[in-house]
Image (tube, rainbow, N blue to C red):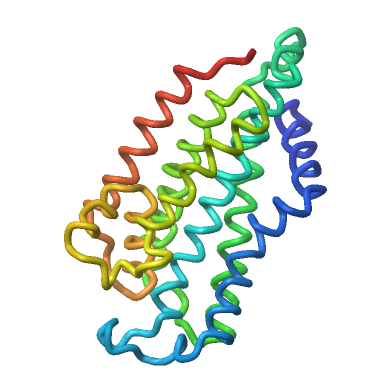
Length: 247
């Protein structure tokens, strides 16, 4: 087994031992859909302000993006801040195992958890509320990968700047909640004013929700949403690599 695989297994075990990260990163999106569908009146019925669509249909893609945001902005930055605060990255530099392997391991673990979280949320939406399976699976997969790349790149940038666990948490949460607003958690994108919708389209999470919703319900995602996520992933990812410090 390669050194990278060994580190990935170790990081995966550490992640699994954190009940808070495991809950919010893996099962919270599915639980949110269940809570919204069963406890909010009319959530699974056609709504006039959504042109006959159900709120549960609109919030299903949002739940997937919520899972990505929780992993990328809430879970990932504090881990990197902790490793820097306690000198783990610095000590790794004195071994044959380059610290970059640790970053790749973190990305691999968070990506696998994100995929599992998405699958669980989709199964819940389909089984409990008769939401259809994604009708354009290839576009759906592309949209999900780009969403993960763009959101995780922001998390890596925060982790590159965070000197401690606390600073990683604070910066990540400071980005997390505004991003959720523009993604439509409180005001669904379908009923946003035009100006707010334009701003939402320029954020990675707003574009992610729209691209996932389109491909989920049989439409080809807008190239604008695809390009926005791609640009965020490339530009922010490049900046994160440039400013990252091991100590």
